[in-house]
Image 1: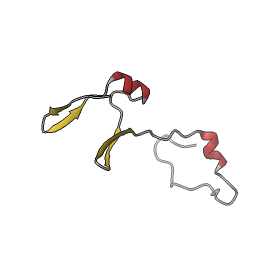
Image 2 (image 1 turned 90 degrees about the vertical axis):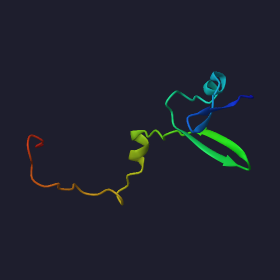
Image 3 (image 1 turned 120 degrees about the vertical axis):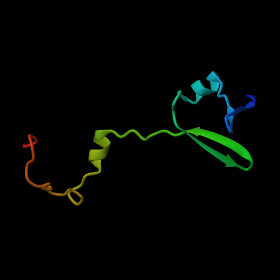
Image 4 (image 1 turned 180 degrees about the vertical axis):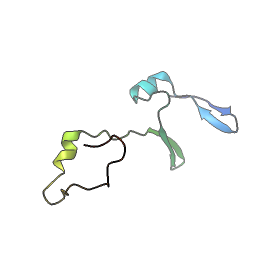
Length: 80
């Protein structure tokens, strides 16, 4: 797809057409990684890894499981 580079303040800007945004599941306000490779500009969405509790719990073994940790005396109303 061909588009134009425009001026935006002291920078240059490229509009991302809606069709490309939908295809890449890019939304307004989302973070992207901007890089260059062999003289080409590469814009890629930065996807935060989503963790599932069950997957995280699978990583706990008797070897890496630690005992309860004391954080000191109760302060305020957070007593258990």
